[in-house]
Amino acid sequence: MPGGEVGDGRVFMAKVIVCGQCGKQKAHHAKGLCRNCYCCMRRHLNPALVEKARIRSEKWRKDNPEKAAAAIRRWQDANPERIREKHVAWVKANPQKVADADRKWRNANADKIRMRDQILMEEAIRQLGDKCACPGCGVSERLFLTIDHINGLDEGGRRDHAIREAKKSGWDKTKFQMLCWNCNMTKSNKGFCPVH
Image (cartoon, rainbow, N blue to C red; front, side, top):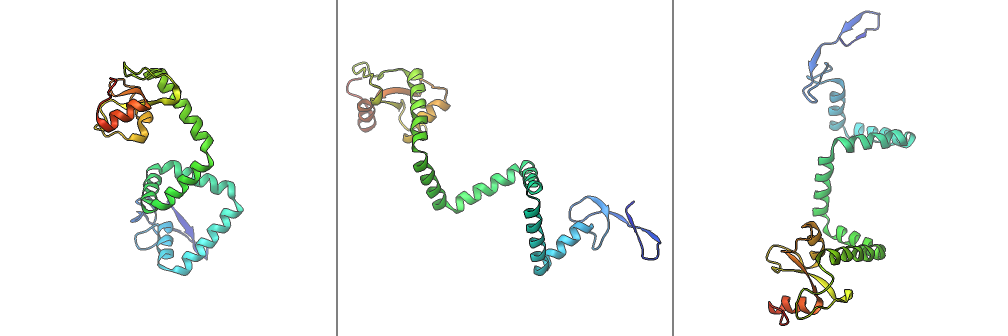
């Protein structure tokens, strides 16, 4: 049982309780709380103590960077849901910052994006065919080929994500086809392709 020593050498035994805050079985300190929870409660009620604890914590992190980083990693590994919730909430609260960061990243990584899109398009051509699906057209110039939603955007697809949607569907040929730019735009605007 937890205990301690009084000034004149007598030993006392602390009463073990279930802490009202953390729910763990620990030595009773005060107000139905263990020592840690009681000290935390006092700190939150007294701004001077909060500031003192913040400064002490900051100094410890500066003096022990490896231990601090390890503690952060342990917390992150134990709380992935909380991290995700905070991230989603921040993104919703800061749409302009997200858009600015996205634009900045895209400008800085334009070559990577172009290379990724080219690799993805090559895979699409291998999977969906290397020429326009219109029988009367048959264009095979790769620069003119595009991916078409066979049923239009009725199934909730996005015009700018056709290639990603096609890959995610496993290159489903009942939903996606390869068309040249002219056939795809005519089908999109008029609802049909005249050379089909």
